[in-house]
Image 1: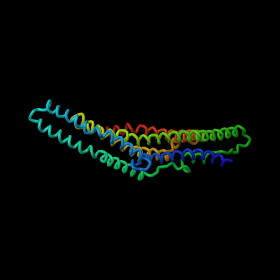
Image 2 (image 1 turned 90 degrees about the vertical axis):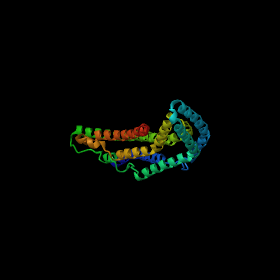
Image 3 (image 1 turned 180 degrees about the horizontal axis):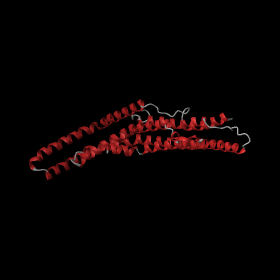
Image 4 (image 1 turned 30 degrees about the vertical axis):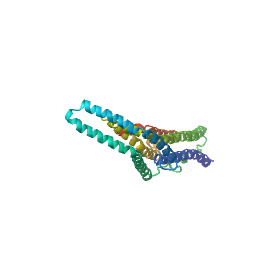
Length: 303
């Protein structure tokens, strides 16, 4: 009977951990996915089609801002420097025209590089899965005293043992059910973050042609190209950031035993059970929150 109850309790957490491991495994593959994979190829082709439409605006925009640049050169540059400034603007305009014809190929090379780097990090960092058969919760359930001690005629002691047994079972039973729900919900949130990581670069990618055209105007145009380039690179590398955060967080999740800090208080099976069950859900929520805040971290690095 005792072994059956422990198997039931461990089974609940096994289901929760298995769901979490499955979602994390899928998310890591999505973070490291290349845009040339069979799953994302059609998405990449759609972005390319949109880019081709928008790219038709590059040369007219570049011409317009080139005229603006010439006007600024004439109106704000000393006469002895106007010729040199004009030649620099012409050179910049020519470079932009050349780049506009190869822009998608250049961006594709950058995307392939970041995807390769992310895949390498994902492969070398290991799986960092939670061992469903050997973890702090399973060990604690194995150590549960689900039996009565011999207290002679002390009925009050038997009642105390019964209450402890019932509370221990309830804590892990309710905690196991709650963990299945929470780990499933947080795992789905991680998958959602992975989908965002795939889509965000492709949303801003087609507009690179417009940014390039505006870049033919000195000053703000050049700064706009620089800011756009950093933002796009940050979004493409965000998958690597998220895999690092996920691997480190999941390693902590798999090996960190909060109950070990309780000292003598941790000898109480009820207190230990509550702390372990809460820590399981809390660590999953913290990892998910870290991933959701990763965009702001990437923006700080590449801002």
